[in-house]
Length: 385
Image 1 (cartoon, rainbow, N blue to C red):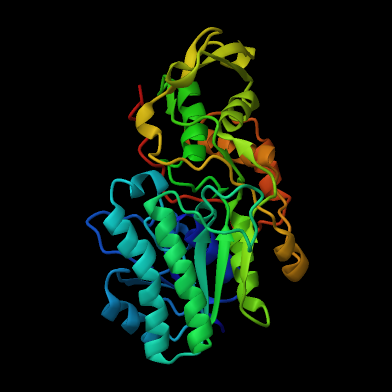
Image 2: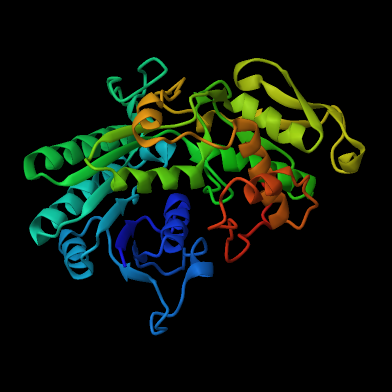
């Protein structure tokens, strides 16, 4: 039985990857931080008491700032594969806590690589690199596009990328960088813009929220479906030799488009009025099923300058030619389908009757190893007015 170690197992990608590897027959180990509150709601539904002889998922307390503990965990587990997904992963927040971001997102990777080197184990290492590393470089971006980081998060990821390459070349480690473009799901953190949008749609329809506040509506991103991307992480470590790959959909869409599609899916047409920070998203028309909640002329979206980044990344779009050619990978979920999936599941969390197309897509596109479960419904009582 193969053994895998995942950092960041409680996050969106880590939880999907754990489910995927368990479906492949792996024994899965995850590193979690000790805290006064539990944050394991994305994996509780697959957790089995370790005393159970059938248990194949094991959690270990650790922190990416603690070299000694990380080395001990790696040595004791002796994993065949290590998936390093743990990080301070919020770009906007990285401007507020740049030192912490550099320590955890940047040096944390070095500590994992050093743990592999010091323990002398034979393992394969996956580093979660990010499209944010490309920053201001013009699209489409591929493996040869120069990095131009525009945030502390992106700068830390560039450092981690090159450390992975360095350890591969200096110590002959099987170490890969997956340069993943934005990928979303029903498990996406609620502070990330896509989930913030789909969650707001559900909360507005439930009467729990009046408005959605956003930053740069014109920023363009290449958005894909997270479960597909964790499959790609695994594929990289099954290759004959280590390499670095750009993963995305090859399309880009603006935040504005995401808002329009999310509301359109539930029968609400949004029109935009005003410019700059005065721009607003207003209900132009609405289907009868929700006209008791919102009315034509209602303002649902406003701009809040606090969500602007000091240095913005305007346009990210992946060129996935290398991954398609060498690994035979292509995305199965379109942008519009991603929006449907996320809106359906956010409506389900509030016991609203969802349109249901997103549920059907998940059922029939080869994601049988997951049903996107969350083991509890997050606190939805606080309306964001």
